[in-house]
Length: 165
Image (tube, rainbow, N blue to C red; front, side, top):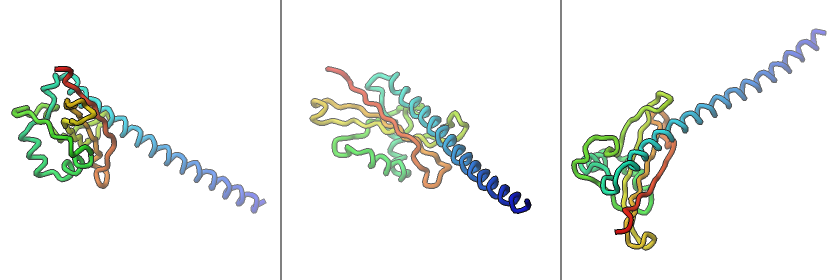
């Protein structure tokens, strides 16, 4: 009878440990999903700022972008990784200022009350595919600064065309 009791306790312990491992995995999955949702909302909000502007007003502040490129190696390497470097040029606006759509790097708080690094790239891409016209591409990259290596959480892009001249 004592032996049966010990076997039953061992079997129940193994089952409970398996359930606990499942809860831990579920918790991590929910945390990642919440993080991705918050980051996607931040990126979408940033892109919506540009959708409300005229084509000529879409750009980053010239002075701020120069300063960031000179002092922020992460921004510079992220821009290099965007691709189309040969046919892409940064689009800047002199005196754009410090409004949200003018800043290349910001720290914003997501809906989960955590801080995220939001990088914005505004580039004009031209070439044969665009029939000689430039297409202004805005890419927003959101990173979790609390993670080791400040891992990328999400990336979104939107393209804008000046329309026929």
